[in-house]
Length: 378
Ligand code: CMC
Image 1: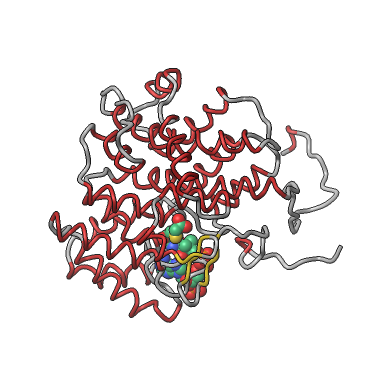
Image 2: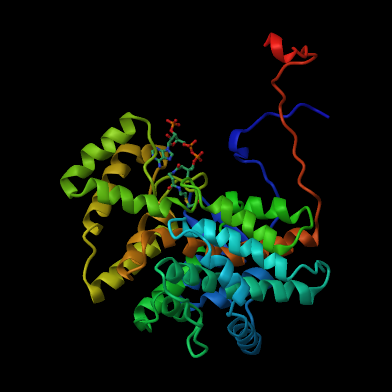
């Protein structure tokens, strides 16, 4: 076998053949199963888009109604999972709570029948249905409250917002939240999806697949950036501070959170839609104090780093949208996971259809024939 060139971060190396989504990083285009993200954000719902991604085609009216109903019927979590979550420390990060809870589901559904379409469907429904319930349950329990039961009369997104603080959400907020889930549901071979596919390729169960992907999503270079953006806007504090703050980060060669992308060299199309959604929320509920700072940051970073293709990514404006809905900052990444689980499951299914275990190679740069030195001589 020929010696291949090592590419840090596997940049530009295809890890799979996939028909789930497509990105053109130069033109700022994102498609799910060939449909532009802008069109889905304007016309679809999260569950319809999830169906499209997982089963490859838009559902008929009957298929969508059946899928929505199945998800509705599986929203409740077992009391043993709730009891387990009650023992989690309230100071723990909700992403860690989610990872542990998703993995724990595997204890209850240990039968593995990966070639059975019914098993695939049941697992997809169960994960999409219960992940929001687990996120909301941890949120209430860490405040010392009992989790609330899902409300069958509310749709997917409205129910999640309701479960967070037992209050029926404003319809505009619920609609915008649903669009946010569409924008976060899938994004080709990113780190957490790669993680999901690697785990899937061992033919383990889908709960392990999702748990490993949740763990990967949490890092600040991936989904965790949305929390760091709010922290950064807080630190900056005023429009006047933006320029010196950005200049200082650039001078220290530090990363500016919410900017830059391995694939996009223009503004992420999801950031454009999220900014519009933020403005829609602000016009109804009042502007966020950080919005002006964010806009100035976008201008200054474009001026300083535009030549390197550094523009806002999906994580830059999403936090402002969630903040306006009153959602705590450390739930932003779990919300990303609520959406992305459907993308991971689409990749899980696709991986199983033509599976070969991931087993890449490495470039060994250590020594050979090294002597073993007895411990008292080291
Ligand atoms: N701020 C300042 N400079 C940057 C940034 C940034 N956010 N991103 C990239 N660069 C510069 C980097 O310094 C380097 O410059 P040079 O060539 O002069 O050394 C060049 O751009 C290439 O950077 P890289 O680190 O090799 O790029 P990458 O493709 O490995 O990293 C990234 C992509 C998303 C990890 C990175 O842009 C980053 O760390 N961004 C901040 C964290 C963030 O917002 N993450 C969310 C990503 S999008 C959603 C998601 O994945 O969840």
